[in-house]
Image (cartoon, rainbow, N blue to C red):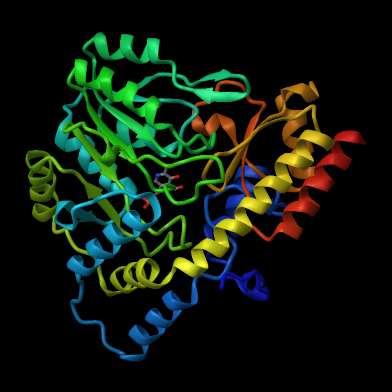
Length: 389
Ligand SMILES: Cc1ncc(COP(=O)(O)O)c(C=O)c1O
């Protein structure tokens, strides 16, 4: 069972999330509670711990990986959770989700090509695109009825320009928490088909889906010119530093190309830790995950209710998925310096600045709420006092 235990207070000072130098550098102080990086504060599922303990107790670390069992475990998990049929033979394993994206960019676009992203979006997308000598082409998400939606008109115009060779989709979308619906994805695919543009879908947050929303994978849609990154237990099982990336495609030509690249770089296999952790997570982690998800759902509901009733000046975008919640503080009428001081010095919260995600307005911040509810409640109450001071 998922539990919030005292263990999270015995954490290492090497955690990036709590690294004092990092906090000082970003927030000007280490006296803040970290809600920035997308790591959870909870002990992981005990079957994963047991698998790791068994591995360590053998006191030997020979070459060992078992991709077949890993891919079967991922396929079974997705069938069970999302009704998604994945062929275990159609995966390519690489070291992580970001390395998967970096490889796909290099394999399927050329220097100078445009790659479309939809800001505000996970900040590493732009970095990966630009560091590969490609151009990030933006299709800014629109806000309609307090919800982010895709600007399909601009999306099509960008693809029609001929400059965009790849679309990098984030589903569920970090940081705004949208879980793209099947009709939205179908519309996206219809446009991409028209201009023969490849779609890469980063689905690392796929399992953290709240009531009322349904996750649809790109892999479920009829589009052969797509590759999906699905199956990393990093976010849903708290395995950020030991998880691999899994690229999936039913298109043999695309798959063979990426397989050849990963093999040529000897990046095509995991190690004993990632193998044991992933198999344990997907084969034995269901009970823990269900319980974690319901805890997270409860935290999300509490935050949304609190913010809408107690701090209506702050616009809260209700996340449909992910452990992230997105706020617009412009209603407070503060300058960006005043807002930063309010959040860090008075509320003592380390939220992720929206500007990191390409949001032009400095009033936006993201909060990772995968923390004990009591802590989240205390922080937001402190924020309310700071606002009303
Ligand atoms: C959308 C998205 N993709 C990728 C990553 C990072 O994946 P990895 O650590 O496996 O490279 C994150 C981490 O927050 C993320 O939010």
